[in-house]
Image (tube, rainbow, N blue to C red; front, side, top):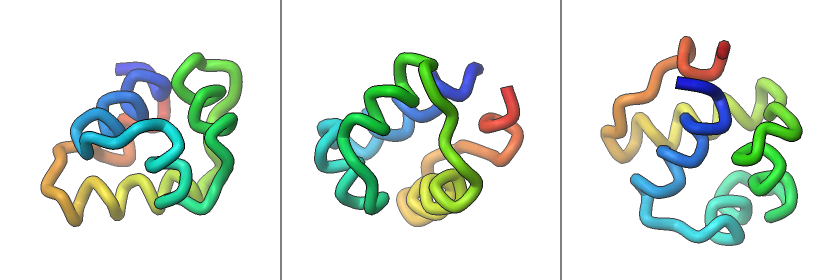
Length: 68
């Protein structure tokens, strides 16, 4: 799975809109949009927050999913 697909999968699994997901991560909605469209890739601190959210909600995502 590509990074953009992993991020979209996580957000949808959490049943969140882009704005809500961005607020949880402490970033702008436009950043989430850019990540999901493959325009930009998240930096390591944001990836860590995403992995923590996945872990808290028992969503199967690993560090390797953010390497593609």
